[in-house]
Image 1 (cartoon, helix red, strand yellow):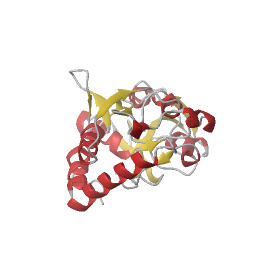
Image 2 (cartoon, helix red, strand yellow):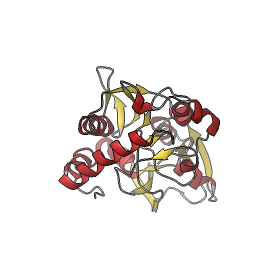
Image 3 (tube, helix red, strand yellow):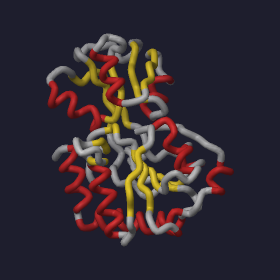
Image 4 (tube, helix red, strand yellow):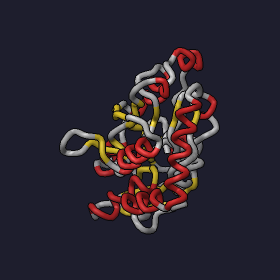
Length: 240
């Protein structure tokens, strides 16, 4: 889903190991529904909030939630501002050079183009994507013109106001705009990117990774992870 925020490995070496702390701080964006968003009470909500709380309960960890802008989410993990990234982050080899990942808690899913018209030019037109994402990287490699924005909502607004011909993002994130607003349609072809979504951690936090992996695996085995995916993304969502 999102991509390529690299920071010095030296910073990671100075960060305090999360598992040694009394509280594990769960870092998220709070602006990528239905994965994560801020509700009317000012609290982190969405799929990853419910998932994260359940993972912490199964791992017998005390967790609190921290929000951070997407474009600096990896550097602030490495500098110790929080202990995990649970923010719709796709697992990629390049990111894995800087941080570690749990096993995926969302299987690999399609990215899609969304536009005002189904025949929008997704090949050579202007395509909006969120900055530092897999989708932005992909568009930059095509003949289309990439227009990057800080948030998903900004990319959608660019299509609505005519700045961009289409937006390219995770299908699960765009689906509510298509199905609930009636203003947008799918365009172009689906593209498969990434190895699924996982939790990012500092490479030094091996014990925390083991605890979270065990919790994710238990949710996969008893079916509760699939149930949660369907709750937020629909019955036709990709599951385990």
